[in-house]
Image 1: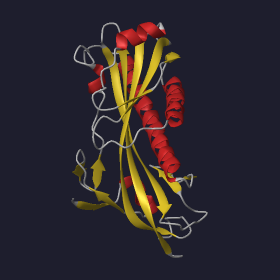
Image 2 (image 1 turned 180 degrees about the horizontal axis):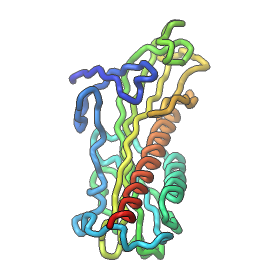
Image 3 (image 1 turned 90 degrees about the horizontal axis):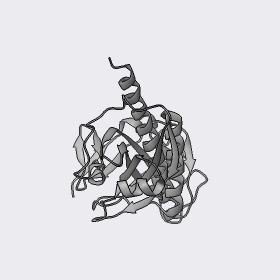
Image 4 (image 1 turned 60 degrees about the vertical axis):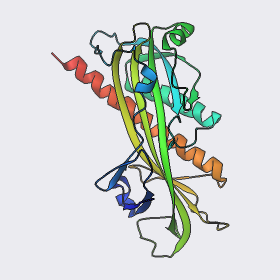
Length: 265
């Protein structure tokens, strides 16, 4: 298995370099690793018209239902979110969309985890059950890579570990959120967008303990987030925070597309 030493642009302010393992599905470009691959088309289906219409004729305050899917259908996918984490991400998605877009999210469909062979969703039936005609579909997927490293004793990356370093691990989580505004009856995709983020979980090795670890660092943000000491809970929090941030970015990217459509002659 090839090893690639890479410093992600969002982490350069922390002075951190990570050992990334080259996995199937990853593509390496320059000094970055882009992942995961888009998954939205697997859920829109062959009958769906890919952005055959724009948002020009859609009224502000359009009533929509929100459907959130945690996709883990490809082999390199990170483990699925826990039930509680998925509920958190779904509620955050509703809030991000309500703030960013002139849509009225009046229904939230039960969120689901989709594994290999389970991509098909009957959107028309789901919309009918929710009593609405339009759906905002959010597909979240992620991959993560864990590698051994040494961590600054005081937990800050700015000093480069001048106070000493401890053995530990770094889990880099690449999250992708894809949004599609769909007329569930006709299959028309009015608009789509995506958001990609990267977050990192740093943990000390073995039985070492510190008030500074475990900790989560989010892409583009200097603030650190304390993580649970339980390994499974820490990784679940990492995945939920990365998914939340990716959906927020995707919502604002969709907002930009909506604004450009309204300004177009």
